[in-house]
Image 1: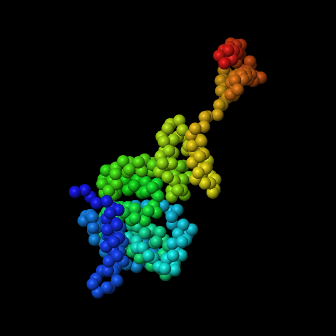
Image 2: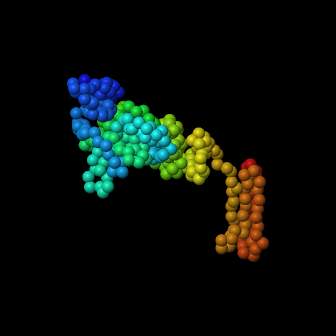
Image 3: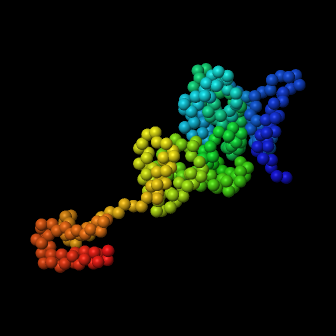
Length: 326
């Protein structure tokens, strides 16, 4: 029998959660449909513990959470902060207890924006349920919650999958795919896109745009970085653009692509026939426009001595040969 799809489990759990918890009509304990769905379809995930209201200051993000810093600012969370201030936190987060860390009691598996918003409101508590699930199980719980909320971009998901592999939460792509019930080709595609951020200059330039950057655009840029002919040009342009403020993502993508396609500017070619110490006394120069020039320093004859005539003849013959070839 094939495994039920996560979307089906979530849909069923959401329906179940709407039912009262007892015949007496007592209010049900707050639930997280996505979590209950996973637990119902995977007995390996441990029982989540009771609902708690937690001091936001006693929490920190889980090491493998998938919320980039751009999500966690007063501006990015403005509407959520106002909503929680007026109506309270409507959806629960999920946390896991932390042992032996001074001042921290819980790490946040998901609900990062809700936690951040609560931390910006005096006296607000972060409403969550507590789990004792393993890292792999927490990764699945986080993934399902993201699928349910649909507010994590595909590229952010790519970075999350890459982090889970890099941190050895999952040893292989196959293990990750099987655990999250995602097709392996899709995992491979996202991990290839996430490779874009392995280049420091590109990562620093695009980090503020992880929400807007599509996986396909990331793959297009990665292809340019994989090409030896264009890689250095893209990196140099990323470094140049990184010094600007307020630059828009479409312009960044356009300029990086243009830099990759740009042909190197022709430069003058210089050949030295005789030098004394570090000083070049007899040189020829071929300009980009094909013009040839010979430079003879005043002390060339004195320094070159008996070799002066033959060196000068050689320089002139090479110039004539080059002129004839052109």
